[in-house]
Length: 333
Image (cartoon, rainbow, N blue to C red; front, side, top):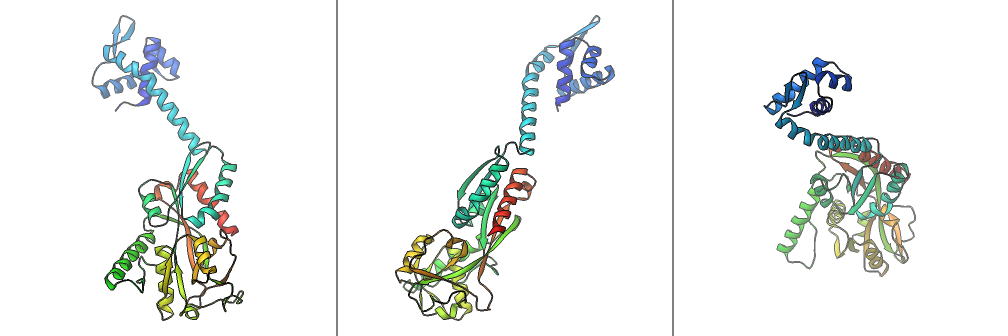
C-alpha cells in the first residue's frame, strides 16, 4: 500500500537529487529516507530510483508515480483541512427530518440558535412522520430525525373501527395501521435523546358542555357518545387504545392529519378530537375549547417526543450540536 509519507519522501528525493539532501529538507536522517524509499519500492514492486555516479535519478516508474504525487498530496491536504473544519464546526451539515408539529415549534428556534453559534454549518429540513422518518434515518438520508410515540406503545395498536366499512376492509385497515404503528415506535439500535412529554388535549366545540371545564381534565369515558375526528395512523391507533381502556370503541367519522382541518371540523360541531399540545401552538382556535385529557388510569395523556440519530453519528460535532440545541429549545416548552 502506498502511504502519503512515502510519497513526500519520493518528491523530496526527486527535487534534491539525493537521499542525504532529501533528509536535510525533510528534517530527518539519511537512513530514514533510505528506509522509506525501500518501503515504497516494495509497495509498488519495482525500482523507483536509479543511482548514477554520485547522484541519482528517477526510474520510468518513479517518474510516473511522481507525476501523480503532487495531486495525491494536495488532495489529502484538502481532505484533512475539510475534516478539520467539520470537527471544529467551521463547516459541516445536518440533514434534519421532523414531523409537522415539531417542524413549526421546536425546529425553527433550534436551527436559528445553531446558525447563530456556527454559521458555517448547513442545516436542511424535510418533513416526514414516523415510520418514514425512521426509515430515512436508517437509510442514511438524514442525520437527525424527530419522532414521537405514546407511553406503552410496543409496536402495535388496537383495531381502528370504521362503522360503515365492511368487516374484511376494516380488518385490513386495522392491520395496516398496526404495522405502521409498529414501525413508527421501533427505535431499536438508534440513539434516543428525550426532548419533552407533549400533553394531549381534547378539542370540543365552543358550545359543548365540556367547553367550560377549564383546567379540570376530561376522561375518555365522558366522550363515549361523541363522534370523533382522528389524525395520523399512529395517533388514530392511540385514540382507539385510549377509548378501549375506557370500555368503548370511538365512532370515527373523519380522519385527517391536517390540524387546521381538525379545528375547523370541531368548530363546526362535527365531532371532538384529541390534539397534542404542540399542535395547539400552531393553529387558530376560534370556535373550539381545549380540555386536558387523562387516560382511564387517571394519568395525564401524553406522547413522548424525541430526537433520534445513529450510533455512528453521535460523535459528529454538528450532529451533537443540533441535538443539544433541540434539547435546549424543548426544555423551554
